[in-house]
Length: 305
Image (tube, rainbow, N blue to C red):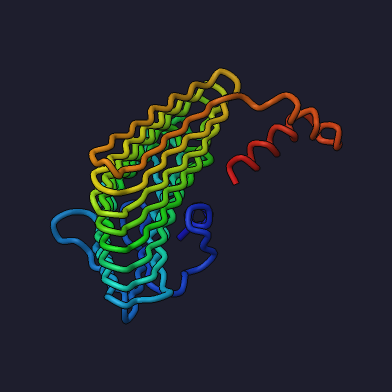
């Protein structure tokens, strides 16, 4: 991998070298390195682009890294990755995509990640998106995540997009069985004329299942954001959706939360708040010696931390 690809890999997966455990590194449409373990197997699909990640029952304290980097202008790809997590597992999965575009043609990565999680398992899933390059071509990413959470299992999702992605549509759908739990944390910042659309749909089908979806976003310059969330409480369950946005310059943010109760014992809450940075916050930091720009940056960084 060249220096540009290595920098992208560091940005989206925190990797300075090949990680311990199972991994599949993909660059410019090709798999460049792969490692499996006794408990985690990675198999190339034969019918379409993508891989199957098979995590055996009882696998504990292991990780899987599957980052994708693109440094070739004009490259477009679509991949399908399926995760099969057995019963009684405790694993961390790190994905993400980085695009460097210094050309005039658009570069685009679309991906569908499907999770089939067994019973009594814990999965932490981290997905980061990052763009760089001074070309006129756009950096486009459209990730889709589909999750089936088994009985008494817990999935944590952390999605981060802070810099350089010109257009993105992020779709997440989850279905939960009895006692299952999902927590989703999204951090997003757009600038320039970038556009970002996030859509969550959670079906709480199982008794005593629960979901907590939290999105924090900052929109700057002339960028636009749309946040959609839909929680369906189809049993005795608890669901919470929250969208907090900071709007700056001439940007635009729309938040559309929806909750539907189909059971007398469904407890559902949605919250949405959008506003500018309070002037007194900036003034207070400026009295400590920061410039207005530095104070603004400090507030934004703290909000997205």
